[in-house]
Image (cartoon, rainbow, N blue to C red; front, side):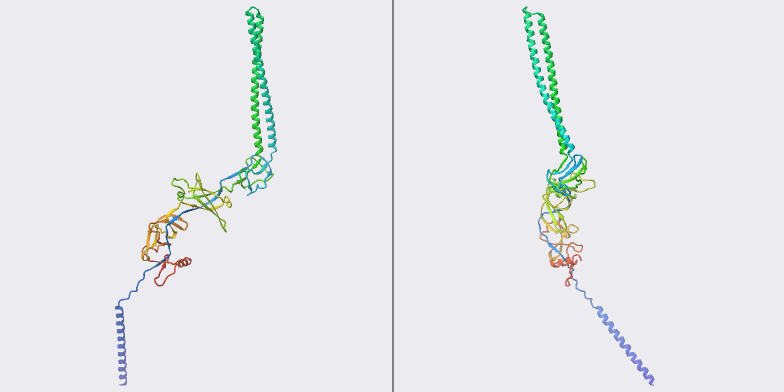
Length: 447
């Protein structure tokens, strides 16, 4: 009996346990069904706001500049060459590389011995020619006097013949006397002819003497020129370069001894593209004498000079493009031919132009402005110039508007943005990213 009671008690406890577990399971199921039946709460969504840097566009009159790279050249360069062959016997102390010389200064002298001998010989020949010319002139005068005397004698004989014929007609003279008078007249006329031949010979001698004197004069001039060619002088004030001669050296005619450069007559040659070239022309298509600024970067400091556009190259070498422009510098004593410089050309002023960072210009040729409720608007513009990291543009609605300085694909019209404070923009530029705010989850435009 005792075993039966214990078995029934265990069976009862097992039934109670199973019932309790079933009740607990049912309660849990009902709770889960009630919770699942309720509507799930939808979290509140916030609009994404991007932080952007802006700049206020102001319309003004701007003078665009064209920047190019050029090379300093001298428009007065003279090759100093030897005009005669000989030994350099004298050399100026300043005839060295970089030496400064003045106009007309004696630079070098070639041995003048042969030239001086030739000059003395030419002077002697000229003296002989002049003496011969004087002798010919005196001979001409004598020939003229002799001809006059012969003609006078012929005139006397003519009158004597006429007198004998008159006597013969009156029966006083004789035929023999007439014949003698005729013979004398013939001899007188022959003497006149001989005197005329002598006069012609004297005139010819005078002409030959004059020609000989002229030739002697030319020979003297040639000898003087040859002597002068032994002196090498400076054609203008400047500095010497490429000096390749020393005293005692034998030089030949037309051999280059040095190059003389005028440091005050400097040009800068620079090349512009075909797109930039029209910006240097006036309304008539001629090259404008636009002012230019030349800058030489010497490392620690920058040396500048001013000038104006003077001319352009007549032709282009094979394989070249664009245009070669030459600008005359006003005063640049520090710059030397061969220096590579940066050239800035002032273009005609443009009125009603806004200057903005180049990053503000979108690929579609527009800019983004902040409009009502801090939302972006797209503004069409006309691009006029690119100036380094800036652009010059003109638009009907740009003046006075806040323009986004950094255009990116994340910025679209209608997007709400937040302006970065100047100090925040500077900090973001240094760190490479704009800060986020926890309240409205603002992000920089590039993020």
